[in-house]
Amino acid sequence: MVFGQVVIGPPGSGKTTYCNGMSQFLQLIGRKVAIINLDPANDSLPYECAINIEDLIKLSDVMTEHSLGPNGGLVYCMDYLEKNIDWLEAKLVPLLKDHYFLFDFPGQVELFFLHANAKNVITKLIKSLNLRLTAMHLVDAHLCSDPGKYVSALLLSLSTMLHMELPHINVLSKIDLIENYGKLAFNLDFYTDVLDLSYLQHHLDQDPRSAKYRWG
Figure 1: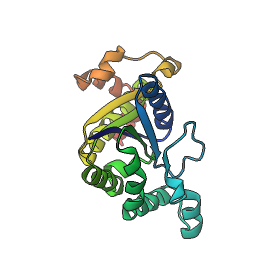
Figure 2: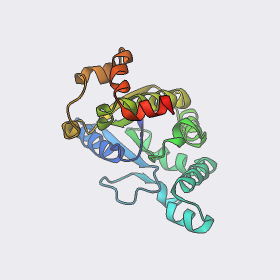
Figure 3: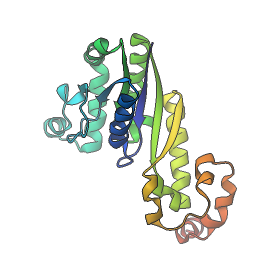
Figure 4: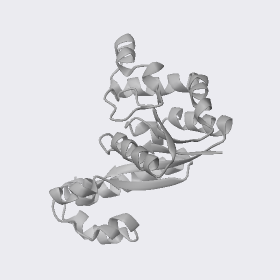
C-alpha cells in the first residue's frame, strides 16, 4: 500500500513551493519521496520531479495547435492525461515499493470542482495501483483579511472536497505574509477552526461591495 498527497488549490496559493518543502521534510526524516508534476504550465520547477507531465504533453503546444487559451488548454491536457493514464501508471509502478507520492496539480480551480478529468485520473490511479491519497487544498492566507473572499474560499474548499471524494485537508498557505494585508478581524484560530461564520456578518455588512450587491 502506497501513500501520498494530491496537492491542489487556486493559482499562486503555493502548491509547488509546498511540494518542494514537503519533499525536503520527508527526506530529512528518512522517507523516500517522489514528486509527480501534473501541471503542464509549470515550466520552472524548484524541485527534481520523478515524473513530469511535459514528457507527455505541453500546454504551450496545445494552445498553439488547437488555438486555445490557458484555461481551455489545461482542460485539454487533463483530458489527454486521462485518456493516456497507462503512461502515468507505467511511470509510477517502479516507485511503488518504497516511495511517498506528491502530486503537484495545476492551479485551475475548475478542474477540481467542475470538470471530471482530474478526479478520474486520481480515481483510476487509486484503483489500479492501490494508492492511499489525501487531498491537500491550499488557500492563500491573505483571503482571511477580506470576509467576502474568505467565505468564497470556504465554499470553494467544500465544493472541491465533495467533488474529489478524497480525505481532505485545507491549508492556509503564506501565513508568514498575512500581516502585510492589515489586522485580521479575529484571531487566527477563528479562520482555521471555522466554528461560527455568523461573526463575519457585521464585517460583510460594512463592505460597500456587499451593500451594492444587496441594493442593486
